[in-house]
Image 1: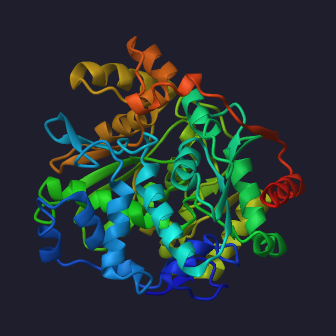
Image 2: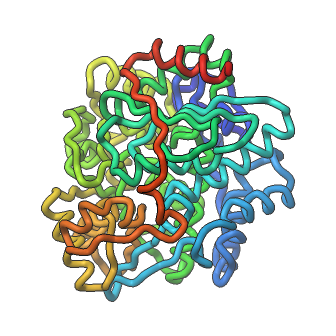
Length: 462
């Protein structure tokens, strides 16, 4: 299995190389040279299997010879051993044909744990084999950072630096990043919004002297391994509702497009998905892009669903690559236009492909609050604001096909919004009950590439 860049200017890599590299040296994102497919029999056999067994079947074709069969099974088992639900990703029924996929039973209470716990296991296995030391730098709108810290904290051959937008994440999200005591963990509160954090991260990867000097690795959703791990729960949930013998639909609350792109990969692998619905909050660049055929940045307005407060949706580049028939030169030109001018237009053929593949909708702040309130009455389910965005949009796309909405975070990660909507303050689970009592360790940093690079080099040298 080989991996190619969405901008076609970087060499093909193995799975292990693509995973450890993250961002391609031409600025693009790695995708499989060929997307494997699963047979109807293979999918049907998943019925009644454990999440770990389904994960092995779905991901094994992408791994190549990076890990042996037994080694990969062991990494998967270790990744999900600390999840606090036996099903790992259980389904809850909201009404007759609408289901909620709970993805918040991992150690940091968000869907990012499904990918990050496995990435941590795979990185560690690879680094142990090679004897190398790496520097992980990540940018987060809230959940990626805590999941990455949880996966890598305390490892001797890894330093972890997480950039998050100062004042723009929930208190629980911030404390999850700032309270770990391990000295290889560095929480950096950066001035600006998530797009600023993500832009600085990409600039670090494109500075090859710095990148090579600190052995830089990335665990944002630009990393193909992240996307791959998320493909699994599309299969596990769909099979629970009768796939591959009947189709299912999915609604995905998303800002950076990684989670719904995982759904696209599942569909390409053969999973009978009817609709893939993009759900956005008021920062609705993805919805506007599908509606207008142009991607135009309009600035970020802080919301009660901060993990979706994004205007530069990195993984959308992977979808563009597919929409343009894998023409990396066109994708590179459009990404340059977005960076330089804040916008680009999509050709008619490409936008038709995207509209045929994805539907979309937007939830306002008022609608999101109303859904949190209503859903508690309708089904007894307490939703986080991001999950509520998904449910709001999904209700507009109801049909005879079962709809699965991804619940991306535990409501306790956003207690203020949930309490305002319902009057209930969602408690943290027992393993995090003392989170507000733990001491915080965080560094406030400017939106300045050189200053950040200096700080990182100083800290890894100690």
